[in-house]
Image 1 (cartoon, rainbow, N blue to C red):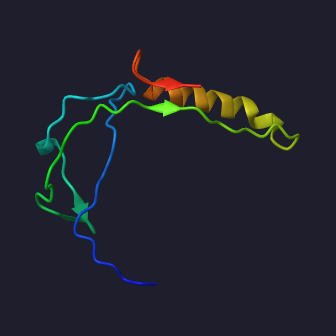
Image 2: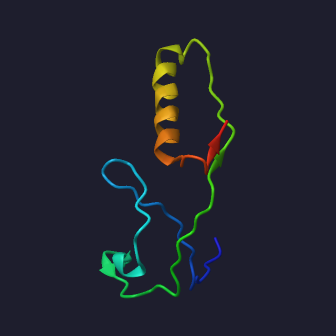
Amino acid sequence: MIPIVVNLVDVLFTVLNRRNKLVPELAKSDFKIWDDKASAGDPFISASKTDLPFAHRDDCWTTSNSIRDRIKFEQDASVNFLFSVLRHNKDEAL
């Protein structure tokens, strides 16, 4: 293992409300970063909102006999995930 000191880290995240809808109207001051249970103060060099489109095109499922009793759960979980993150007329999934 080679120790490396890192002074800058990009953190990308999405904020959802209790109804799993995007919360786009947030500012830098709405966030706090904690490091080892201690506040990191105001570590932000910059904070910006992106409107990057989401594209999901690959999903691999096994349909072997060992998984057949769980395939409905996997299908439902995939559909729920996609509907919670896809934005109408902006993102796509195939």
